[in-house]
Image (cartoon, rainbow, N blue to C red; front, side, top):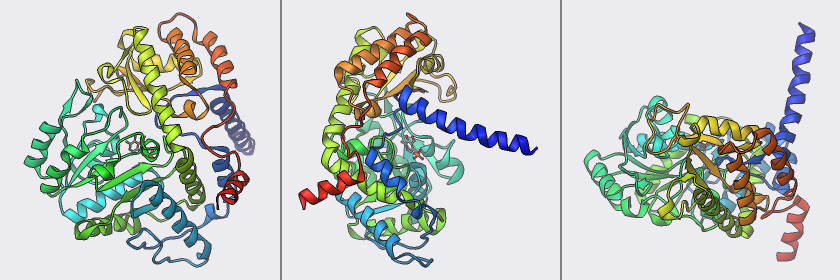
Length: 447
Ligand SMILES: Cc1ncc(COP(=O)(O)O)c(C=O)c1O
């Protein structure tokens, strides 16, 4: 018994070490929902161990600052929360935020719950799951089965790979939901927020834009700015194209009674309804990422989108069905590829994994929602390789390696050798700081 227990601990440590080497040194990571932190942000996380053990339960004010806290020992924690909130508000040009969410799903939970209580309306219009909505928007997931919302699908235009604004307007008018949701997990093209803002408001709905995937692109000014287009709330993860510690945020502009009522509802849903520990250790790192994106976000986002478009074009030229050709394949960090001709999403993702190219199988907009285990497609994201310094020619080289696997030209185990070699050429992380001291030096020079 004791021996078994010790053996488990040994294996746990060994697996953890092996994982770090495997995914961060030997693989090329193309999972569109994952981010890559800079050395400075990682160092900041390693400097905040005490904070990571603390609690700071309580209420916030209408600026998103700490109002009351129910524990002692908060004199620095309060400043840290307020500073990271202010840095994020400044980055996104808004006047209200909640940084206490521990994930994007948590941000959705608090926002959907808070708004459904504020509006006393349980209906929510969302994109269909196979057209890119996250499971937390869906009746089969958090929205339906946890919060009890009745979800109604936006109309989706398969040709445009987007929500159909005219037909969705009719749906919103007819169903009078409390929430209209945009954004998603398979998300190549900006959603018609501008087009549907007025009709949503007239129907009595709040607009929630789930920017989990594209928050970093928004910060870099390379994707639609939802708050400027009429969204009431942004919910997001802080660890995808926004390359920060794992966590979540909700952003909004407090203007007028309508928004005050909604923000109070959402804050109540954050605390006390859905939060106790808010994972405080991530907050200083979150603030550092805000600085990195303020300085380097535009360059990072521009190159990320360019790399995704290059991959779309190159794979398509080489005979692979990349979706969205007539629209330039993508305007975000990700592309969707139909791989039915090569055995389907599951087989292709597993073969690529053997070659140390890591991505995920994905439902495509014309798939049956129930076919999640073997959908037609794969989703490919370029935010990680871009941060490692990949430019268009490197992306084409990577696509050649992918094509070798997908088309069965070479054994994945052979391709793996080339993938590891390619990975070794990109050891530095760009568009960020290399250490906390470098951040401090930068501040000294510029203040
Ligand atoms: C659109 C969208 N919303 C929410 C989430 C959930 O975010 P988290 O994993 O931070 O809970 C995801 C996850 O990938 C997502 O794609």
